[in-house]
Amino acid sequence: MISRRQLLRLSVLFSFCYPFANIRHFAEAEEREDGYPRTRALLERAYWSETTAHRHYDEYRKKALSEGYPNIAYLFHAFSVSEKIHSENFKKILLSFGDAFQERPVPVSSADTKSNLNAAAVKELQKINRFYPDIIKKMSFESHDQTVLNCMYSWKSHQQHEKIIRDIKKFSGLFFKPLAKKIEKMSPHYHVCDICGSTMDEKPELPCEICDYPVSHYKKIQRPV
Image (tube, rainbow, N blue to C red; front, side, top):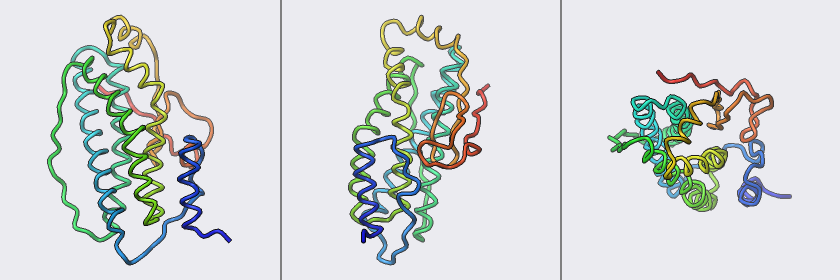
């Protein structure tokens, strides 16, 4: 009979082969008393990465609004909400380990909207291609199921942004202004899953494709003003 730990490791391998596979039922939280030293260190790293991204996107939102790009600001706002869900999920697990958790200042840099879009594209692709694959593989050896599961949630929600990221890279090129005007003529309605941070540009009709929770967990993101 396959053990739960073996099942989790198989689920990680399966996810790397089929990145949009539903993963809610692959694992349940496993309690252990040895402290999970590697998991805790990696989880803290992931927490600060998502917290930093959340704050950067919030600054990008403000800049886009000030430059007259409300739809781009809306995109940044939706990403900011998604990143905050990831960071809060990680923080809850860190606190469950019983450690004293201390916040610290996060340096945030912001430029013009064109530059911010380019920076966002680079950072998102780093998370999709390197950051989360590396962390998930390293975490799997200690098999703290809930931590691996939430990192997979975050990784997969970033993968959902791939089409948007490809567009972002176009928008940061030589023809930024005419392309940005095209964006401003669109009518996106972003919805974010409050369980895993899944981000959709229209109201979904089915359960979340990442965490499989009911569609009621998708919250419509209000346009920033």
